[in-house]
Image 1 (cartoon, helix red, strand yellow):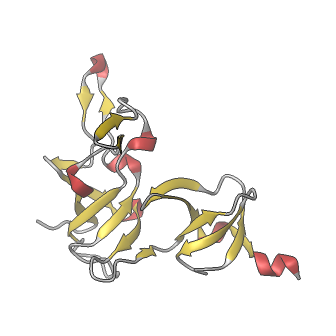
Image 2: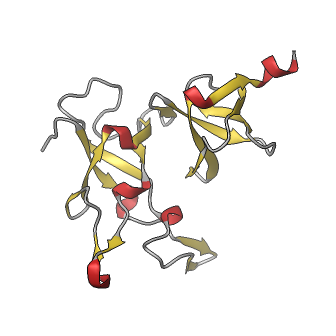
Image 3: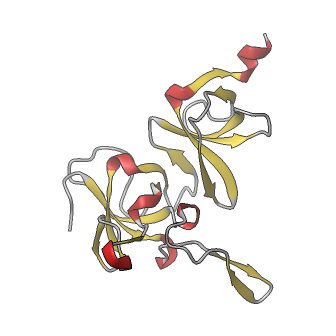
Length: 174
């Protein structure tokens, strides 16, 4: 099965939500709300790239996606419903604009999809270091409200549009 414009994906580890943590041998539920976007799984495995796609993402790659792709919601009357991106059980169609980064299982290194980059916050407001993407490794300053928090490999990173990076920090110091 192939789509002309969307990625066919499955949830990473088969989970729609990452809402548990393990302490010792006991697993604790952090949130039981399907409405909490912070605990929606944002990692997926690509089973089929779009037929009209000519980028670097390949079948089998892990991708970072928008939280609404897997997110459940409530329909009228309080009935739980799946995302409109769901094709069938554990199979979803992610629009290209909902895919922000990818990792090839052989290289095992995250790469951002333009126009995005992922910034590691440094503790100073609106400052960070580009973890992956354009200007990787540079300390940067970005405009207010341009950052969106992701947890990738246990680390908090901000997804920032590269056009929202004001300057590289070394330029600020000169």
